[in-house]
Length: 278
Length: 297
Image (tube, rainbow over all chains, first blue to last red; front, side, top):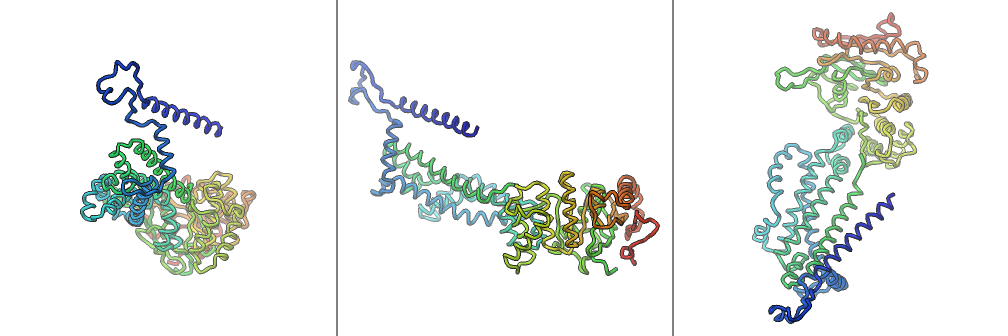
């Protein structure tokens, strides 16, 4: 039954892909007009009836992708770098910003989760800061930090921190009283209770927060790099748009999706280690 | 006053009541004592404060009045001297069966070697028949097995006082019977001092040396201390053939059905330093049978 289910899902999935690509190919096919006498003045000026569409066909995108992926790490100056290199810059920034956010959010979330007073005290700030678009911080970051690359990392940091902070605090506060009582009757120290009872109990919730954070970080880095420029996949997209190379833009969009999926997949794998069935 | 291993004196618990200046008194004037190695059950209707008394003994809750002295010291907080088995097993679900026990044993004796901790833990798990499932997680065990891990964990740390809050309440009747016998066996080998809450009259007759009976709350008290005068080792299969079985059982049931309520309404004008009446339903004439339970003042 399961194999059957997988098979049926695969058939639907592949049919959908072929249909979409087929429609796309048809829609972008060059229009061939019959009868030269019916050409408009504009068409005559443009040198004939057979004009390539502005949007590249999937076949063009595919051949472009093969070309780019065959040499992902070349570096021919600031305007011409391999896609692998650009993605590496972006992933590097996300990792730096996200890593810093982990270092701040998890200990802070722990403290807030363990203390009802701090929970109440910090909650208003978290609620106000959380909905701020990370890009709104950009001017302030650029002014204070002055370095565009560090500012991008800061923006990633500030957008990654909230889901992790909230989830950590929630996970820690929701640890079952029974488990804490076990620790209390065994006279475990606060620190040992935190590491041997609260951390494993809250780990799945914390990991969920990390997944949300890394997803947001990856969304934000593209926009941030469009602003700060220089390197990275966001800059690449914007640069190719300025070059009017839409095949590259579509290819980059696909790559952004794939890398985002991989980042999420890594955290899903990590969460399998800390998951427990109650 | 001295001489008792565990001495509960004039214990009371009051909760503030919303919309009223007068707090609700769950129980008050609770006095009783437990000897070392004794197995004592407490029975009473819901809301009489049994669990609160147990939590006070565990150090997890505080009385509004009175105090508890164990082994010459006032209980002021949770400690390794009091082991607790909760109703819902409270195992750590991310640890295996064995590690749930070693976790507690390591906390109890931090200086022990890894091998010794393991050996000690395995021994107790084997006592409850779980030697084969050491590496399983609690989610992979049946409800009865989980409760047994909890029992092994509590016995393994060898507390001075073992507290059980309806340990079999969540189990089906058949499993409960099997685990009661296992509990009897492990208790016979270790002679722990046990204080246990139950709702099950038969369970208390099978397990206990003495059953404390509480009147209904609010203002509940421990009204009687009933001696279960049935020789050990007891077995579930033959328990009802013992001459003492029906007198004790009937006494307990009669109390719960009738007197828990009537005594509750009569309780308010009694002395706060009330001592439960000691009763031996098997030998009602030979009374009082246990001088240790008579308070000197």
